[in-house]
Image (cartoon, rainbow, N blue to C red; front, side, top):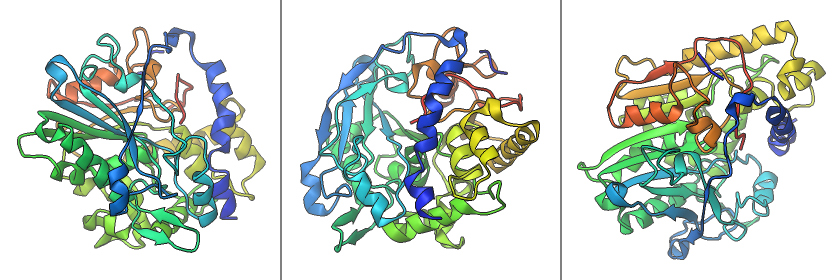
Length: 405
């Protein structure tokens, strides 16, 4: 229990999230008030040598990441965290990302990064990973590091697969090849990328490295929306086609599943992953409610527009329908009795991307399920202190402290 028409789908994909931010801040429980200003600013590291190999962002600029070096007994451990930020399914959307102020299509625009939550360097706030080498990999390809194409007409590089390899190889040269422990994870589109590339990441390291993967808010559900349509599946299909992602999607999925866009849905991938995987997700993931369950399309009823922007405006019938989404999500989770191999921390919050927000990651008093913070849950699972499969049994959607993007 907790304590505390196609263009519209692409171009307006983030709009509802930004509308929701002030509402969530106002409704955040008082008990979750913590000092969220405690962070470390980490400079950007470019990989200019990757350009000659075609490992580039959408605009052709070099890939990049931020790294805070480990110290003490964590100096030989590595946390590699992939940034999130949605996807682009049309040439127009991808071109917009090249000038996006967040740098989602160009490293020319990227700024320094504040490390907090699981990336934090304070032992009290991040007990298991605070002194590791912590790396935040920037996301600038628009297809969860799977792209393998080039648009000569618009000069757009869909090279996410090569970007992923270039970053990992650069980190190997900087000491990761000798890692004792390595945790590979990401948030949202980055969380999906961590699932897609989990075994691939493992293949870069030696058998002597203890490698595990985790996904924060990356378990996107394949289901019909409130209109009875597979709007999101069609969206994923367009992404795979535009970016030429087939080559870089898990072959265990693409060899049997059609269309191949369905291989962006974790429920079709996770059963084939051989590396231990931990899932952190909200059963009422705010991003999925607004994108998959009640998508931003012209013919979405106004009542659902109000509901997905503000849960307090949902009717009792809509709340019941949302509970149905939760059940579909839970039923799509991997079935495994081996919690040391597949662990999970599933809340009933309207949250998205939780591990980088200190209020969600590890606070006291604060955000807990079964009296465990997600920091405790993930740490216990990674180090094998105990098996961890935590699912909040409260089916009522809640507003909790959150970081949406």
